[in-house]
Length: 337
Figure 1 (cartoon, rainbow, N blue to C red):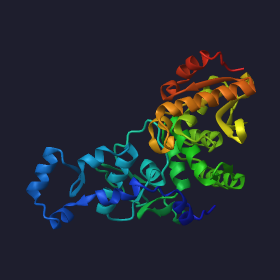
Figure 2 (figure 1 turned 180 degrees about the vertical axis):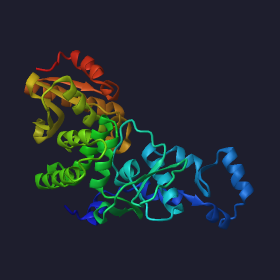
Figure 3 (figure 1 turned 90 degrees about the horizontal axis):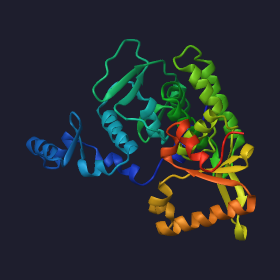
């Protein structure tokens, strides 16, 4: 099932610092043109001012240290892509990073590339090469870099990642296809799921298919953060019925609140409390951390008071296993029905 890949790429391409990452990656030839010598480059690397990405490619070490793990991996992808030859495409976690998919507890040790070359090819210290068939619909260009399409990328990842990370990827991909600012495009969801199902059915003998089928059925793009996706998985493992997601609750003066999890079977609400909304200035919208905390308290008090439901919050440390989440929920007297 074909997708309008160019339009999709335009929708999800991230702005801001990511757009500047290609400018950080400098080749030896570019540095020489700027007046550097090989000896100065070696001294800068030894002194920690330059980071040697791979042979002939460098990045400012201070700028690199300020990036997120996904951004640092994107920098490595850019260096590999500029240095590369042949028909290989970025794939697996590397394609996922280009598509803007989130990753949960994943170490971006090497850049992943796939080629359909019929002969065996060798990897490198910073590159893991895979050999697999690549059809015309499997390949796109994202931000100038050749990589696997979104559905092919998800297909590769849900088969090979740990289940927690696989759920995060599957949820996020569905959300990319269906979310329209608080509105949910059910037709887009159906089309996306049909495309993924077709791919799974067409590759029945591939490695990891049992997990892939289960993850594809379990995926729900209404989970908005990796912490929410992993929370869903741990709740399922604990025996909770599938929760309602992004449950609307009418607030004061016409406001509308949205709660992450509606645990209807035990008359409770649950919320994954990520640190980002407190620490990220953009998400605070000019408010201090103290004001955000106070607003959250007023919101929670209103929801509890008007619905009569218990309300539990948990964070990243609480979802490391079903046991840790169960322990957290027990403090609020919330157990599977």
